Length: 230
Image (cartoon, rainbow, N blue to C red):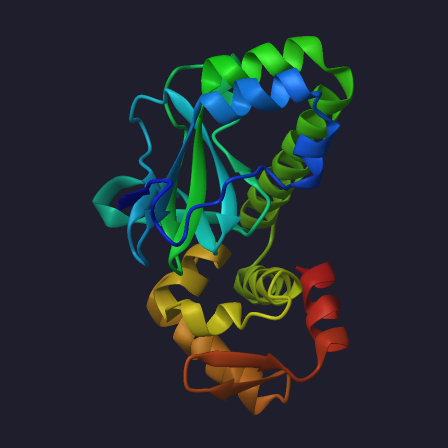
């Protein structure tokens, strides 16, 4: 982790995300005065589950993985976090701890913004508050879908869901290349061994193509059908 100062080449002097454009000049100054720019290296924790949360994170650039930590180093991956997303919004209005851990999949540049600044701006600016609420609801939808899939679907359906989700968020980045087989297993709620075996079955059936760490979805419609059948 490295704090970026104004004299560093990677310093971002302005807040350019669309959601911040909803703020007045005075509100922008409140956020700007309360933020610190930090670079997290690949593999570092942006947040740690259960740790005290005095700030909210906003991703300027990079990709990270959000997960719940369980017993015996067994985790449950929830979602991929990309540029322009907030981390830790629930700590602004709920408990003063992070409810999950977030690990950088690439070098990730973020703003650490004091919670009090976010709360103040939310109270003053209805459109900004609406944007945050919408983002938070979208994140909750992903969480509920994950819980439902892990509770009611069998292994094939859970792995198909995980592959479809990861592929849907990759954009111009090959997210699969950044994930280990264990990571994919933890998105599907399966053991690593079962995931490796199922991936080979999916490849044999022509559903996917394995290229080292990368996974190419060869038959998306079939995977969607497997997901529906559970």
